[in-house]
Amino acid sequence: MAANHRTFIVFLGPPGSGKGTQAKRLEKKLGLPQVATGDLFRYNMKHNTELGQQARAYMDAGELVPDELTIRMVEERLSQQDCAKGAILDGFPRNLNQAVALDMMLEPYGGVTVAPLFQVDDEIIVERISGRRVCRNCGAVYHIKFNPPKQDSICDICGGELYQREDDRPQTVKNRLYVYYKQTSPLIGYYFAKGILEKIDAAKSVDEVTMTLLAVLKRYGIVE
Ligand code: ADP
Ligand code: AMP
View 1 (cartoon, rainbow, N blue to C red):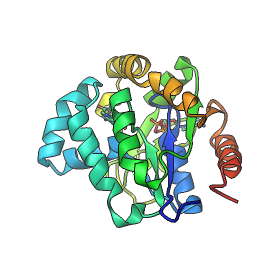
View 2 (spheres, rainbow, N blue to C red):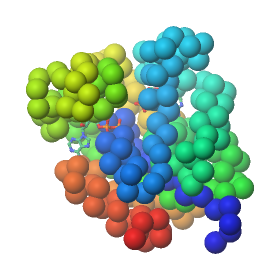
View 3 (cartoon, rainbow, N blue to C red):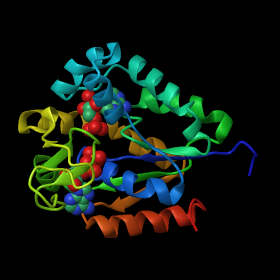
View 4 (cartoon, protein in one colour):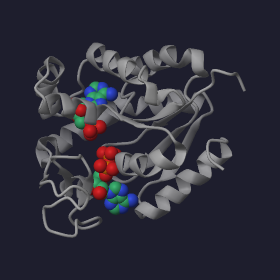
């Protein structure tokens, strides 16, 4: 393996399929940070940065933020010290243009290592998204039925207030799914052609999905 090789895992799958939940679980075990573009945009919106202001209207409508802004943000994030061994990419790339840009970015490090595809039916997605609650303070993710906090509306980890994301309301969810099928799903073929697509049954429980993912990552030599 080349000396400058790094591990980049691309979590592919529709919104609400459990990518963020699994990325957070695996971060420590793999020693790789989760790089979630949705979280980065939400952070920028919360702090009212120029990027946050530029992204807001797209996010509220469930549309993709323009590639130029998104790619620049990812490039900057991946250049940070904690990505020196690689990263778990969650929510990026989301169209072919972004996938090609990512390949160029990662070319010196051996490219994308593996792309697990989180497969779940639309009905499950709608159920998961409608029950998703996020901590306003630390960003931890809960589900009112599948992963409820110990105390109603309060984060177990930091005591922050839990809220429902604006774009998790039913009308926007429909559009986000449409955007996924139209713009993001072509990436399935893109990574399949590279021989690194790994289908995951993401309808199973959180623990079972973690176990499936670990088995795949083991085959790629990413984890023991
Ligand atoms: P994504 O990052 O793909 O948008 P999340 O990880 O935020 O998805 O998960 C969406 C919602 O579904 C959250 O409320 C989460 O708690 C819940 N969830 C995640 N994985 C599972 C699972 N395997 N079974 C049941 N609920 C899940
Ligand atoms: P997520 O948290 O992944 O569900 O993303 C929430 C929203 O952030 C999306 O609906 C988009 O508006 C925006 N977003 C996240 N990742 C990207 C990306 N790679 N490209 C464009 N927009 C993105």
